[in-house]
Image 1 (cartoon, rainbow, N blue to C red):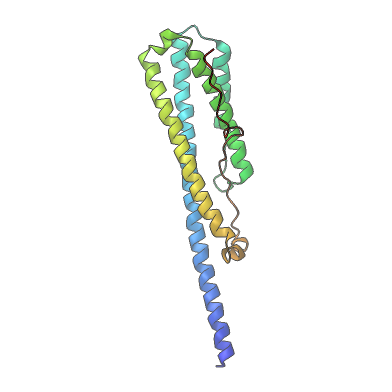
Image 2 (tube, rainbow, N blue to C red):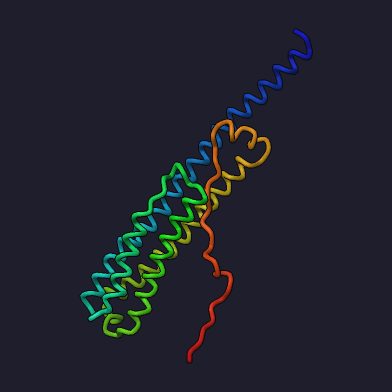
Length: 194
C-alpha cells in the first residue's frame, strides 16, 4: 500500500473515531441537560402545588381581599399550563416558560405582602410553616436553575467549539436556552421606612 493511501486511511480513521466519540459524548451531555430541566420543572411544580395550599390557608384564616387571591390562582394556572418540551429547550421556549413563572412569582409576592397586614394570619402555625417552606422552595428553584444553566453551558460549549461545531450540525445538535435574570435585577431596590 502506498504511503499516501495509508495516511489518508489514518486520517479517515481519526476523523471517524472523533465523530463517534463526539456524538456519544454530546448525546450524554444533552441527556444531562434534559434531566436537569426535569429538576427545574419539579421545583416549579412543587411551588405551584404548595401555593394551592397557601390560598386555602389564607381563605380559612382571614376575611381576605378576593382580588389578590384570584390573581394568585390565575397566575398559578397560567404558570402550570406553560410546558416546554425537554427536546426543544430553545432560548425562546425557556423565555416563555420563565415569563409565566415570573408572573406567578409576582402574584405570590403581592399575596405575601398583603398578608403582612393581617396579624392574626401571620400568627397561625400553618402560615408560619408555609413561609418557611416557601423560602426553601424559592431557594431550590434558584439552585435547580443554576444547575440547568451549568449543564446547558457545557452542552452548548461542546457543540460550538472546533472541531465539534463541524459535527454538531451533521448530527442535529442544537443550542439549548438559558435562564436569565429579570431585567432590572442588576439595580438594588430602594428601601424606605417613611
